[in-house]
Image (cartoon, rainbow, N blue to C red; front, side):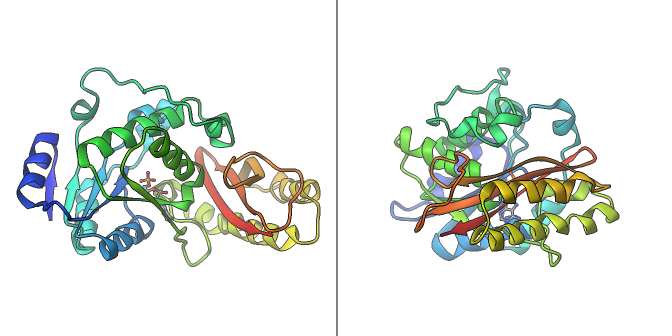
Length: 282
Ligand code: AMP
């Protein structure tokens, strides 16, 4: 496995090894890797000649400095995991390599996707995501890029950015990889206490119950039920719960037949913010 820290080294290596028809699979990450990330690597390896992962904690997508400072950084063990997963190339640039001395986002128009859910609570987050993903796509020029449904809004925003910027990259969504307890794997789980981690299985339990309820109860009753489930919980604070259309990501108040929706949730355990979602097909 080759590890590069600069664009020049990476591009020089690509020139040496890449034939015209080779498919390049790309998995962008912020490190602190877990099995969820590795499931994306696995999928990329199945469908491409080369798989490249990036590790870069992108400063412009953090709205809170505290969250950026506390983001786990575990480069050595990440490289170990990627090597074991037979990833071919890792790109782990410095902040200067990507932003030079100008750490700012490009402003994007994602047709309103950026104003829903995460966009309401994390100012500027998706401009930061768009900026880093576009920059990495331009450096790497992948054939296929793999994103987790864990961050479903991000996945749809990247699809929108690719379409609007007319980039020649296929964006592939991958299923959410979970702990046995049902808790969606996340780099942030490392910051949970044992007690919080155990109790956090409630998030997926609630989401599964929501799917069950969606065939017989109104959305407003379901929302009410979710809010009560968290209201008196000693460990978690509900930030938002919503059922939205998968294309517009707009909250719906009623489910129509033969349509695709998702239920989305964000919960705080102390200062750790956890998100999850689940598909609802009618
Ligand atoms: P991150 O390092 O958190 O930015 O995540 C990098 C990529 O891995 C993103 O596309 C995430 O959606 C994806 N990812 C993170 N956690 C999971 C998970 N539990 N299952 C599937 N994909 C995930």
